[in-house]
Image (cartoon, rainbow, N blue to C red; front, side, top):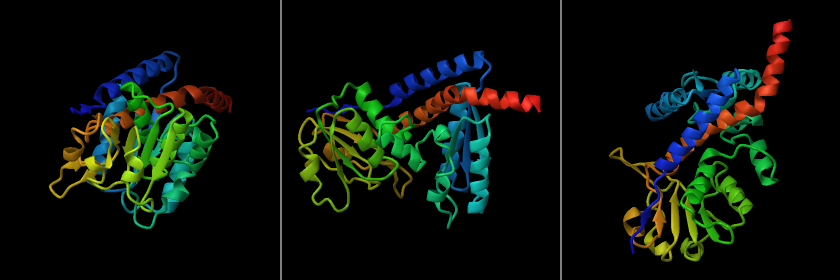
Length: 295
């Protein structure tokens, strides 16, 4: 059996086009979407990723402010910057990029990003809103999985989906998004026991555990669709996912590649979320600008 490659490149292009069109509509009405990315590391791969977001944003007509605080930034400095950005009317979306300096607690900081500007669904309030069906930006990676499944017309409603990994960034919000689409969801983790107990009966398996080669062909039944969220750097510098591609190919009906799968869609969604946030925030921005002009 051949395994279809579920590339995210075309979908990412479509999402970027949508973001660009919406950004142009806002621009025509005097509104300019702006994304702020807060960085506090000297990790070169992270800095490269941030620069790639900046370039992509500029191509779509979205402003992008990189606030590089350096690897010595304290938690207090980061907190102050995030509070200022959350209160600044000209900023529509905020990302706190990881990794953070040693000793800095991310949990204390992400709660300072107002949910209306939390375009990557990091604030626990955003996850809570998702859980009860209220408007919120989902974590872009979790949403990217759902967008890919829908793009390739993989049935979700009424199907069994196994999510391997329970992080607040992917596993938990993804389970909520899938439940919202009427899937029956099983979330697997390190204490779940033999993985095949849950993945073999599944119609769709999503792996987001951060372990290279974790999911193998023996864990699957034929015709399963597999979404690989993992990004693991090997000693030789190459990037691989959480799926053992060699053993899964020929068993799975479809498999997302790494790179070129979920990651490309994730970045495009962050930009779309920024534009959507700009549209939602505009009345408050106009009021703030008018008030400032009168004083």
